[in-house]
Length: 228
Image (cartoon, rainbow, N blue to C red; front, side):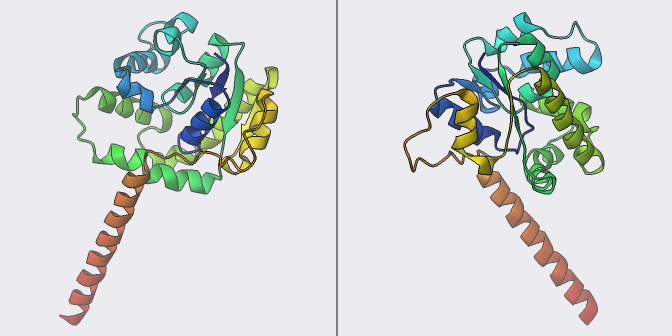
């Protein structure tokens, strides 16, 4: 394992994973690998061990059941386990991906949190079970009340982990330069754009369209009420 990207979802983790791959750190385990490899039940097992006392906390041999062959990790579910992964892979560099708290909060609200709210509470699909568990354990299934505090605590935890090893705090607008310097690799050819990857793009558009429809309906109902 070369690099642990331990920033929260919606902090540029997908773009960073793709950027690392271009710099020779590949493959990187990202959320999109979970369903592809049918790892939902294994990550649920790890969450249960960490938060519910169901088995011993995971160590390197446990994570290797999922991460063997990968040179990096990024995004959830891996970032649910910053301390555990740091201990399991002491040779790996740590990157904390960050963005402004307000932008992160808004992006979470229109993606992971919105999707969780629309799921049936008894949905037994493996990804739904995993999602339900981390929403409960990370921010108590009440993102509006505790999400911002979780963001701050998580970032500080990762910064503390980084004090004992090679560590970089990175924002999407930072691009290639600090990343290449940190990894000790050559920068891509001049003019190479940093990846801007977002599997949630279409979902976010749908959410915004839904907001506009609801606002239009509310305005129409208000106007109708006022004229009656």
